Structure formats: C-alpha cells, structure tokens
Amino acid sequence: MLISVIDKRRKTKGLTDRFKGIVSVYALSKAMGVPFRLIFDHPFELSEFLEPNVYNWKPQAGELSDCVADVRFKIMTKQPPLSKLTKIFPLTRQVWVYAKVDYLEEINTQYHTDFHWGALFHELFKPSELLEQHLRIHLDNLGGGDFIACVFRFQSLLGDFKEYHFQALDPAARQELILKNTEALRKIVEQSDVPVLVTSDSVTFLAAAEDLPGVYIIPGKVVHIDNVDDAGKEVYMKSFIDFLMLSRARKIYSIGTGAMYKTDFPKYAAKLNEVPFERILVE
Image (tube, rainbow, N blue to C red; front, top):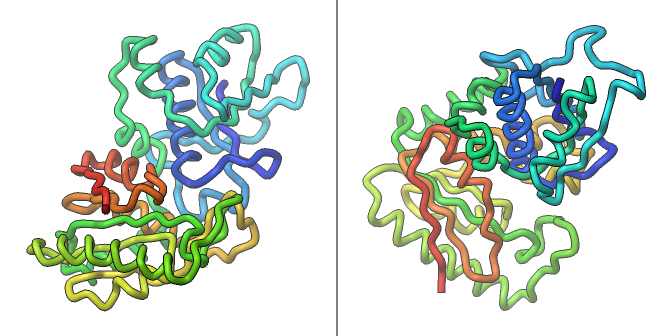
C-alpha cells in the first residue's frame, strides 16, 4: 500500500505542491497495482473541503499498520528519483510518502501509462457539499460560468502576506508594482467579452483591481497554509474556491513582473479541465 501523508510532522509548502505529491503517489499506486490511501490532517482535515470521488482514499479501520517491520517512511520533497520509492517494493508492506513534486511524466515514461493530471485529480476528489455551495454562488455571480481568469502572485512584496523569508518592498515600489499589474489587467479586461475573475494572494492588489469594470473578486482572506496553521475554516476554504473556480474558466492568465513568483497554482488549476493557460510578463 502507498500512503500519501500531509501532517504536522513535516512542512509541505503550499496547496498546489500538496496536490502534486498526492496525485503523483496515486498515479504510482495505479501503475504498480497497489492500494492508495491519503492522510491529510494538517492544518485541516482535507475532507472538510474535498471528499473521495471515484476512488475512496480514506484509510479504513485496521488498514494502517503500526508495526515497524511493515512500514517505511519516504521523504520525496526535494524531487529525488522515482526509484527511491519503487525500489523498496515488494519488500515493504506499507510506504508512507511525503511528496510535493509532480512525478507524473516520469511515471508515464517508466510504466508506459498515459495518466493525465486532471483525470487523476477528479478520480480522487469532488467538492464537499459546503464547497460546492460556494462554487455555485460565484458561478451564478459570474453570469452562469462563462468567464476568463487572471492570477497575480505577490508573495510578501506588498507587505500583506506572510511567506517564509520574503521581504516587502518600500511603499513607493509597492505602488509602482500595483500600477504595473493593474494596467496589465486593464488591457485584458478591455479586450474580453466575458467577466474577468481575478485572484491573488494580496488583498491590497485585489482592492485596487476590484474598481475595474468587468472584474469579479471572490471575497475573503488568503493565507499560505505552510505558514499559517491556525486560521479558520472559511480562510482555508478561500484557497479551494479559488483553485476550483480557476479550473472552470474559459482561459487562465498568470500575470506578473520578473520579481514576482511564477506560481503553479493557476497552471495546475488549468490542468484539471484542460483549460488554456498563458503566462504574461509585465515589463
């Protein structure tokens, strides 16, 4: 059995990296023909937001061994070769894996499979009833669901988002960065014939962007789940709403300057439903 693990014993970066690791371990279990289970209990229980869909990944009573001889723990957080996992089978009954990278291409090559990231994600997950209610509200607000999306990832540059060691810009540089990105957004809005969903990790930028006509902002605070482990359920819910709303867009743009982080959050949201994805570099 392969068990993907996200708990308080190890940091696993952001939500996208956690999804990368989970889907990779699931793909490997399918390729090897062994059962897959998922433990995701920090800083929240995943089932509050995503439930099993086609495949039941929840450990059943008595399934998880507490015998040292049966269990191996593998840390795959720095992208070691896939053989670090595969070479220990079938000598070990259960392998508990901490992973935060995407091994899907390597798995397809090694096992001659044709797995697709979005299809695997949908096999594993469906929105909880509460999350689905939120999604329906925002889709209705967007006129039924035909929209494009723009994503801006500032990390700590604008001073309103705690993330690792990254430092904030001085006030003048912050304002210049906001203006550059709002102007890039304005150009897209003016060319679009449908509403534009805008997501960002910066509430400062969202406050500036929401004044543009045709822009839709999902209210709520954003946190980095590897740095904040005591936020309320509604705060964590925002990340899942953003991710799944992006996956339902007509097209997704990831926009930013060279100093901003090229986030994989919108890239992997696009993979869910094979939505066209484009990065735009702001000069």
